[in-house]
Each structure stands twice: as C-alpha cells, then as structure tokens.
Amino acid sequence: MKNRVISVDIFRGLTIVLMILVNTPGTWSGVYAPFLHAEWHGYTPTDLVFPFFLFIVGTSIAFAYQKKKASAATYKKITVRSLKLIGLGLFLGAFAISFPFIKDFADIRFPGVLQRIGVVFFFAAVLFINFNWKSLVGICAVFLIGYWLLMGYVPVEGMESTFDRAPNNLANYIDVKVLGSHNYKPDYDPEGLL
Image (tube, rainbow, N blue to C red):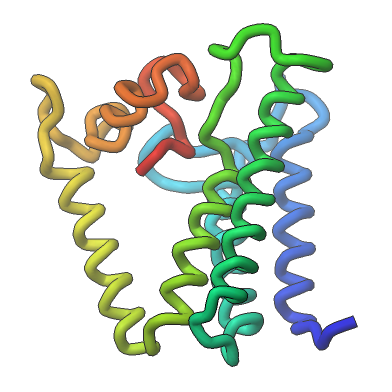
C-alpha cells in the first residue's frame, strides 16, 4: 500500500460520519437543527460536508500530484478518475430515483455531489500540475471575485440581481434554461452548472 497521509484519512472519515448523520437522521419529522441545511443565508454543520469533501480532494491532489509533470499519461489518469466520479454520480442518481430502471429520461438529475467533485477534481488537478503556487493563488482569486460579480451583479430576465434569494442569480438562470426538468427543484439546483 502506498504511503498515506493519516490526517487526511481521519478527516475524510469524520466527514463521512457527518454525512451519514445528515443523510440518515432516523426520522425526518424530528431532525436535530444542526443537521438541517440553512435555507439560504447562514450555515449549519451540515453545510460544511460538501466543502469538506472538496477540501479533501484538493489536499489529496497536492499530495498525489506534487511530483507529476504535465504529460499525456498524467492527463489520462486525471480524466479517467474524473469520468469515474461523474459516471458513479449519474448511476447512483438514476438508481436512487427509479429502481431498477429509469422510466423516463426527464427523471434523471444530471447535477449531483459526485459529479461536481469529479469536475472540480479535473480542473483542480490540471491547474495544479501546470501552475506554481503563486499563479494558483492568483487564479483562485480571479475565479472567486469573478464568480461573486457574476452571481451578485448580473441581472437575469427582469429579476433584480441579489444575494437575498437563491434563484435570483445567473447560476440558477442558466440551470433552469439548460437543465430544465433535471434540476433538484423547479427554480433551483444546489449542484447546478455554475
């Protein structure tokens, strides 16, 4: 077995425990408040599960690819791993919705947690092997500021742009237009395209 970073494994395990507690509370009629998602503003420990997984992915990339150079073999490995995560997410989403087979294509929900992790892994790994730390910090700053500007200040079809309500931003507008009935809710998807 390869050398493992025990702290990453422990953190991953604790995050999985939190995820299990959130997803299987025993009864949905009496869920302990910290195990519910915040409606929009604020956060609860539940809202940290997905970011924790993304943090673990980023940390793992730093350890696994620290000595890798940009090559066809490295890109192939990154692409295959990303596609496996995306495929597993699509399979689990389709399987959970309609066992044993999908009855209607409209029932499939394309966005999902594993799909997002697969996409994030792909781009983060490609950036990591192609840029130094200073460049990565700059790229992250540009992405974060650009995303904030897009979400808060680009008006969409007659709606005032605002941070006050989830559907009033560019991400949800694109999700509704592109994904249509494949969204988690009619006007909102927490794991949408943006």
